[in-house]
Length: 312
Length: 253
Image 1 (cartoon, one colour):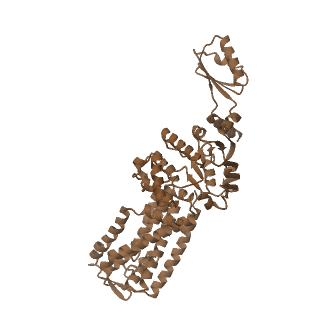
Image 2: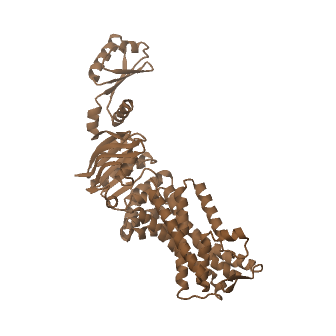
Image 3: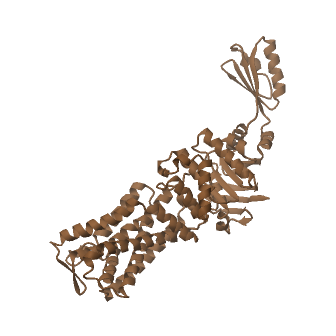
């Protein structure tokens, strides 16, 4: 079942189209990753989906509700962690959580027990009495994310939630989110950290200049767009003439680095590799190390964004 | 619990802290008991309606209006902080609408205004209890003034908070505006006797009307002028509230 259904959604500011006719659907109980470079339209899309701003065109259904006609109804069922920090500077961590639960009408007893659990889950126990303004950026971010779990929701929007977190806190948060998804929560997650998206997301959309370039599972995206393989060869000795020896090989792009490193990019990598090895052998050039680099999401992402830029 | 009540609860929690409460008490105590009695050697009696008031009694009643105005600065500070620290956007992405947010601010300043008025009335009681003439008409008059005045000055603070982005600009403009309201009014001294341009300026200031109505309520001096002042205060409060609401409604993310 689709949790989010977006059809030809656009948002314009004057002549600038921040979001340009995007169409997508997000399945319930999954993590949907929304990737894009800075200024691609990720945050504007989140603001549209969370009903903070009104679309210029298109339709939007969230949890089966027409979000353009009934924004408040939608907001009762969703949680939102925005990209920008949000906190009450003078409140302590525990007071922030408690008051946020109160704002969502969570009963007092329930608020208390949720707060205690979240303080532990997000490693906030030792700062519980500290005021928000006295916390570090990372601690404040953890409070901001933890706070959203003070209330029940069917769908959670997270706009770069790991910004400012150290690697261990980041991994802990991603694991926490994975656990919550197992309980039926759907997460709409934006990031530009591709390893995070690969680790967490069931499905990914890549957006640039307000347009969606591709939507699929991480593996399917790799299969579709990651045909080009990368092979790295490290030579035993410096070979100045290597670039002229390999320059005639077709269907590939070869980078030479310092005369000992050869990096081959090709969609016909096996064939190209055979030719390279034959030339090296014929010229008595010895290999120290050879490795194939698996295609990762980052390469696909960069390739797509670069292609999109050159198309424009 | 209704959304507005939940937001009022939140507003009061973030606004009221020990320092704020202490200031709300110390400030009028210094004015009433130090300035009031120190100046009484210069100003023996202030004419008000058909009465002559002792200066400390005149000042204490003026301080009620002044404190209502001062405490409604909170409204601007709430909006300003919510914008600065991202809570406005966060609240608007939750189970609330802009009218909820606006009305909760008005209720917050209404409560703070009424409590401030009551606080000063209690603190100032020893100096004006001789002249007090409460009746069934005068108490609603004071409540009307406290609520209308809170809405009026709260709306001014909200307008400043929504229009300004820099914290320096916000603080300078808010403090300058409120300093002007405080001293170009009848809160601390009577209009009678002031040089002509200043006397006229007193009556361009809503704090003058607020203070006059409160004094009329406390000292039982309800006249046609006071009723006119009530009308003017209500009209200005309504206009400013509409402007503040429109600006908040248009506030973009």
